[in-house]
Image (cartoon, rainbow, N blue to C red; front, side, top):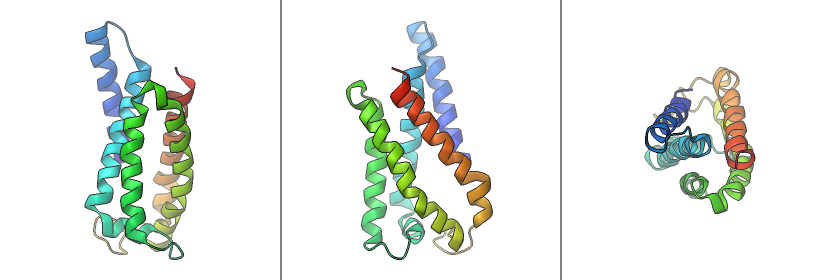
Length: 152
């Protein structure tokens, strides 16, 4: 849930900044800015912790390092896409699909107790999946749906 701190802090900073400089609370901008910051952080983590990220991917998927880097680029690009009104909605739809598709890696990672930071099998396991990852997936999907699709 530490990652969600980025989402919420940037969202509230965006709200405060738009209130100060525009005279109103800009929820649309701030919500998408929060998600963009979240995605930039997680996308860059794919390049910093690539070995641990590759361990998350199910065995039957080939070219693991390709997928680690590709999904990192996708996350960063999605964050950028959310900031442009003309492509925000399609970006949000694709991002929700992306969240659903990559969830298999989160299940696999928890099952194998992957620690992405150490690139070993000392992670928290299934408890993490149920306590943190599943709730976070719901928050990310709902946030993306609300700020990327509903609120415009």
